Length: 150
Image (cartoon, rainbow, N blue to C red):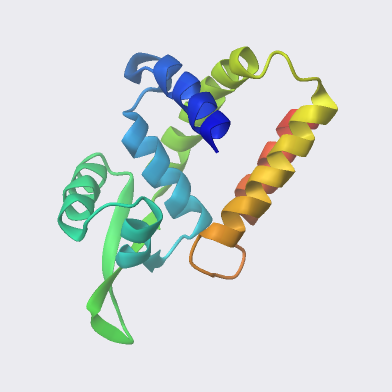
């Protein structure tokens, strides 16, 4: 796991706000929301390992930018569901495209098959680690696998 943490730090160091068009914390949150669109705010907090108050502040920022909306859960009025807006999807797509250059740099020692294998393994590990939801990570994993094999 130390290698995974070190590799993640290499990506993080290269991921400037100017390059991505947003803060890395926004990218991480939007990526999760895309993969769990309409999911509970509490699950976002758990997935990002953040306390509820900080998630509220983060979501306030994302709402102010027009990237997400929150609405009450009709089955439990105490819960908020978080949804990605069209503007948020466009911003996330642009940031992920910019991040591809970073990944190319960091993963330059791997060939296309090795990158595809890495993506599949990381996506499976993530699905196993996150709270169980139908389709968790499927969208991101499919997109990543397609991008790596292209």
